[in-house]
Image (cartoon, rainbow, N blue to C red; front, top):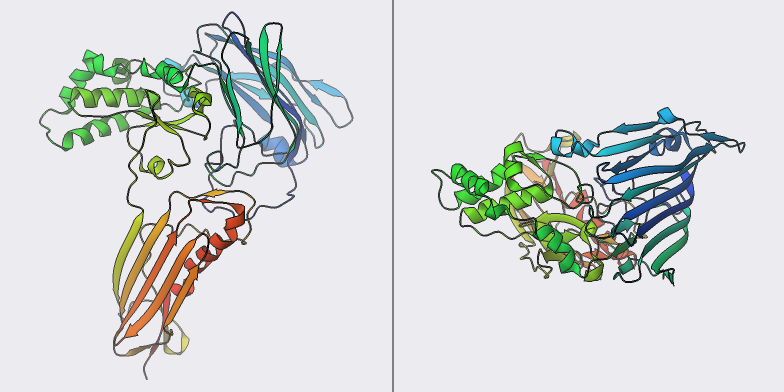
Length: 518
């Protein structure tokens, strides 16, 4: 699967239980990443992998190709070795026509970034039991990248026997580093004028991507390393390029867009304009942590995320409105270790980030902690349902099954109650939960209620659930309330959480059985 290191599959239904020993598609004998900052300011990232294939899925889909994105104007790709060791031990070198250079998909329809290249290495002579060996370097000229900046998630779809990450810098350079979400200590060596920090991990299990934020949940280790003087020093690389408010073209564009507009309508018009620009899906690292001037973005009508933020802030300021860019990071770690490569999102306002800011570092472009105002986490809805001849499902014997209206918000429908009550990893919810749904069902005189009155109450470590059903005359009132007082559910707490959610999602609490009177 393309760029598996950086792509996380977000499942519609979170799996509560993962197989303890699932059959592996493949196995990495060794996987290493070596980052070197040289004294002249040039950098090298060297990647080596040995991967043995066990299934046709691994051979024909997951690992049949390798992909490397680089900028040939400033970077050189060196293939040191590329071959397949077949099951009988024979070596088949990758032929020249199996190295295919293409335009990265993220740069499509963006001429300013058409200079980027993606090398596709098509692995040949594959068979079950064969081992792919690939050793390559991306060498970057001095001055292209602001500093050495590493954010490396440690996790693969297949087990890894030996995982190595090494960072080497001149002794006189500051080096901030940490292995987040793990306790493994690195070895540190100082020799020949260089400082080298190396993590060596053994027998890593396969990582199964059952959620979109594994690093924030604490489930995925991440190597962070950079040579910036501080978080603020790193962010200043971006801040110094956010100059849209000083560009005449931006002021002219704001005036043009807001002609005849006033009040709250102005902000919406500007945001809609920026949202409507073509979106270039290139990361900050792929663009060398550089952004084009806002005037160029206006002219070409496409932009990266950072370029859109720069333009939007400039337009807002030109219109006399306020707007401050904020930065969200992909993992929780000491501030100094969070370089530009660890940025997951640039935004002005984000209710999603606001609800998880206790677990996700958020900063201004000045490097100061940003405290976001979370939205209301409480949901309180009331519905009224009048039973008619068309309502519900007609059953044999004069019975009718009435399904209560579905709630339009909250955790309802997330299917957290599926699967078993055990989980081996943390679960990070979008927010804490405080939800109450009240439904009044009016029953005509020709029917009688068969569902018995009830009161279900569960209190445990994860939260509280209460469901009541009361009948008064021709009306039935069903009240369902759920409070989850923990946003991060650990494996030890998951059984309690699962019990609440299984009860919450049980259809017996959202259906009524009626019988036609005879």
